[in-house]
Length: 326
Image (cartoon, rainbow, N blue to C red; front, top):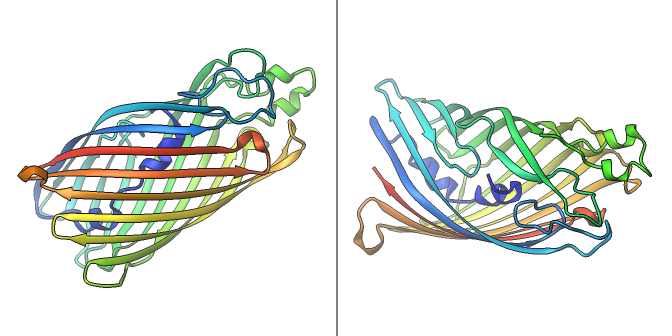
């Protein structure tokens, strides 16, 4: 996983249509594909493509750009008793494997685990180091589990719960400032955390035979080893989706607020973030008359505005993916 921020942006896709296609028929089904993308952003915290050296914690956020390419695959097998075992091999976020059961009314209950425990992202070992090159370390996924109810009552509403245990290897956040921070204050900046997230999506509202409006909300509770990095967050989202024969499109907007539970000792204030995201995407089935294939394009923009300027970030993402379905 190259950067934690682009994982957030890459969740956008075609959720309504994907849910509608789940567990169609018995036996094997799946897809293989390739995703190509480009990231442009600014901020002090991106350790994959960001600036190694900063001269001040008050410096203007650095700009960065990078590209990525990765394969993806999904394989599932549905038994005669409507139980489906599946593997989602999206290598960017570690993928997942799980089991689901589809009830007579179309409701799907799923339990999932990470496909690759230990999936890691680059983060700065000490993001607050100034005047010297910062070194990277790993944010590693130690444990995770997810539960979901999808297409509840056949109405495409859903509820999801996810637990994650994230460990920062050799975390030295704030140690470069030991001349002004006490050991207890440095400990407040530790980033290893355990997170609980619950989200709900409402049934789509049909504006026409091909146009749908969908909404949802989420709540996240994260407990970090350092209280200055522990927070609760709420968000709401709205998606407008269009489907016509081989063509699908969506526009998505979301907004959220994260409130931290302790004073950040570096900046002498409790951190508060506002996160806004806009995404648009299109998908076309059987391009160039290639059967059982889809071509997708997604453009997304994410902006985090904090009351502590050091944490301000902006990310723009462009991805193109091609998938073959079987």
